Length: 420
Ligand SMILES: [Ca+2]
Ligand SMILES: [Ca+2]
Image (cartoon, rainbow, N blue to C red; front, side):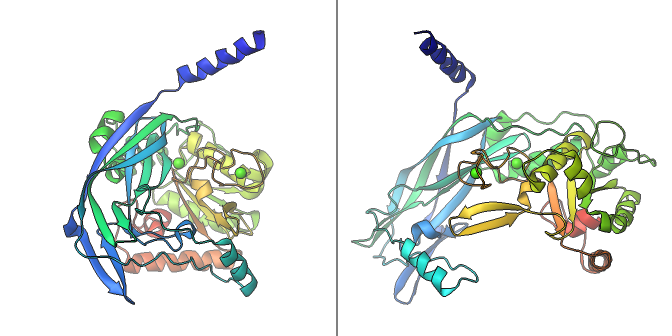
C-alpha cells in the first residue's frame, strides 16, 4: 500500500500548486462590417479585420472569415481550454453558395511530391452547420512577464444544404487557464524604458484591457524611462564589460554574433554603435560553442543569448553572417516541411523540444513563438560583403528613412543603425 499513498501525495501537491483562473470576453459584430460578392458563380463573404479561412485542415470547407484576438491572462498562466459561444445571431439575407478553401500551394514542388500530397489530402465532408464549433485554434504566448492567448474563431454559422448564413452579432469567449510551467527569463538590467515599452506593446495588442490592468500592476521603477537613459546607464564614456555575460561592468544592450573571420569588420561597426550611444559588443560563434552547453550549435548560441539578456541586459542581437556562419534552428512544420527560423533566438522561454526527440518546434514541444528581444541577421559570408551591406544600409537609412517608433518600424534603421 505504501507506494500508492506516496503517489497520491505527489498528485495532491501538484493540484495544490496549480492555480486556475478564468477570463471571459464578449465580442460584438455588426452586419455593417460585412461585404459580400461573387466570383465564378460562388459567393464570398468578408468581415472587417478578419482573414479568410485557410490551411490544409480546411481544404474543401466553406471559406468563411476567421477573427483573431488576443486576451491577456493572469501572470504566469496559460490557457488550457477555450470556448466560443454565440450569444446573439442574425440571419443574412439571401442564400449562399460559398467559395471553398483551396489546397495550399507549396513552393518548388515536383510532380511526384504533388501527387503524394493530394493523395494525403482527403477532403472532409462539410458539417451542418459549418463550422461545427466556432473555435478554430488558440495559442499561448509569453512576452517577458506577460501571458496572453491568441484565439481564432469563425463568428458565422452556415447551412450548406439551405444556403442560410448567420452572423453571430455577439460571442462570449471563455478561457480557462492554469499555471504555466514555462521558465521565465529575466533581465537583471531591464530599465524603465524597456519595461514601459513591453507593457505598452502588450496592452495595445490585447482586447481585455481592464483585465490587463488588473493582472499586471503599473510600472513603478524609477528613471526617466528614455532609451537614451538606458544606454547612458550602460555607457558613461568608458565601456567596460566582461568577455562573456556577467553582472559585472556596463550593460551590453547590443550584441553581434559572428565568426572569427568577420569579427574585425563587425568590431568596427560595434565601435561605431557604441560611439553613437548604444554600447555594442562582438562575440564569436567559436567562443560560444566552446563555452556554452546544448545539444547542437543553435541551442548553444541560444543559451548564450539567454545569458546575455539576463546578465548583460542585451535587448538586440545581430546575427552577423549567413546560415553557414551562424546556423538557424531547423523546425518541424508539417510531415512535408521543415523550416529554418531565427525566432528561436528571439523567444527565450522553453527549449522548443519538450518531448526531447529529433524535431524542434513540433506541436507539444511547448515552443513559445513570441519574441522577447529583437534579433536580426545580415546574411553575409565575407568581409567585403559586410562592408557593402553596412554601407548600403547606412545610405538607405540616411536617404529614405525618418525615425520611426519602436517596434514595428524599420528594424535596420531603428535598431541596427540607429540614425536619429
Ligand atoms: Ca517569448
Ligand atoms: Ca520535438
